[in-house]
Image (tube, rainbow, N blue to C red; front, side):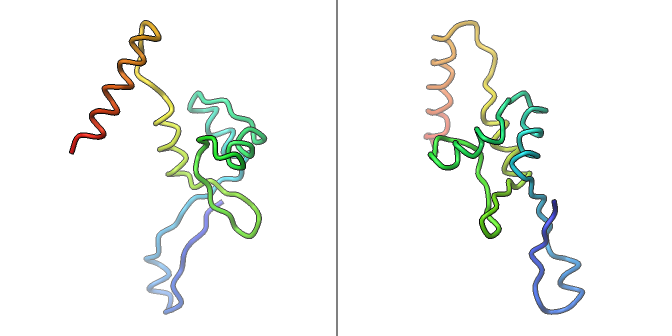
Length: 103
């Protein structure tokens, strides 16, 4: 689903307005599965309602939609670098946090 945020001052402005692709929860679930992240639509709903680190979404009236660009960014952030052990994974996470904190 694609929505445009179109200004009200003519066809010229509407032609240059940015478009945003929005996915339903079911579509977002299929998209994430293609990235290797298995999350059912009910899991996406629970993650949103509990604030437990799910992907960001927008609401149109009461229906949630996931912006494709934000969903892709979120999915990429969930995938870690290869690690041979859990201690190595923890070390990599600490180093990544330090790099983010350093200006």
